[in-house]
Image 1 (tube, rainbow, N blue to C red):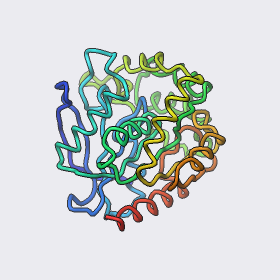
Image 2: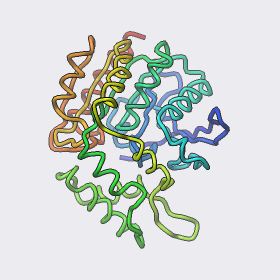
Image 3: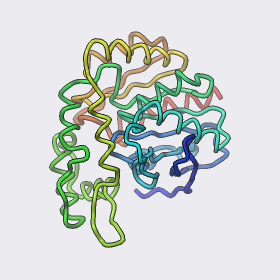
Image 4: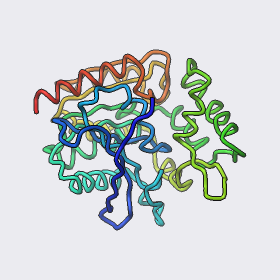
Length: 291
């Protein structure tokens, strides 16, 4: 199902031209800011938005270096602390004093940094398949393709490439949806070349991720900031990024958290799965009532 949105442009604190899209009524009682994973863009949330009640407003972003946002000439700025500042600048641009955050993978880490920096601006957080312990197997899998995707010749071969990379993550994906997936994650240049819709230099940030006791200790401290707002943790049943034990520990450590496992998917759920869509709708309805 296609969803229509209104384009938004804003400028990052360091001067990059960034892009987002707004879906739903501008006068909605609750706005949710949707932040994607490493190699995705704002379109990653369109299946979810199509499954949501129309009364909510969603702002889906292209993080710098992805989609229609500018590529950063300094790859060292492809980092969650920089992204978090960009998101807060977007909220300022829109006059949003407070919003719910929906973060997939990297977007979840950005969400945790945002509530740590500005807790008064966060109504609640949905963490989609990410937590303080990032499994080594998942990082290795993503590092193997991020910025290194083999060239494709047309949209059909792009859909085939996406299926090759993601088939084990979404074993029940209908055949027709692989083309939809490709259209959300690839772009066509003016010369007709089909290519991944992100700056290959974003992959350098993975080299700075060193899973281990110290990293996990620091990330648990960042996670502690989420206790200042309600939390919904979504985990793909077959995830190789967020382990079941970590997800359960997150739910235990947070005073107002719910954990929902999405069956038969890996990293990360698309969020239009019935279990995910229902959990998100219930969560946002609760936040809406609190507003």
